[in-house]
Image (cartoon, rainbow, N blue to C red):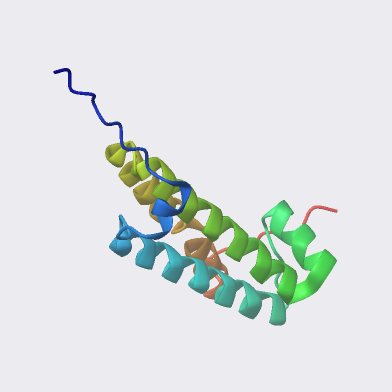
Length: 125
């Protein structure tokens, strides 16, 4: 009697059911994103400007809501990519999550440096 190998396929909704792969990475990433939005808001209110051209466009287009929506969409995209990739390639997704955290350290660092007057960057005219 021949035995048939059963291939179990993961349904598309399985992604919604499993444990979150990198909760600590995500917590750090989301926290840094929030700090970035808060510091950007403060700098804009005190006479500063947005250095990032894409974020500046979002702010010009929709104000604070545009800035917040852009950041939220970027964060959501990275988290979804980490979860999807992590189901197949855990090491790659972990590296992506760490990279997202490290890259997201840069804007708050620049904002804090601007805030404390360590440097000023003039907007392009």
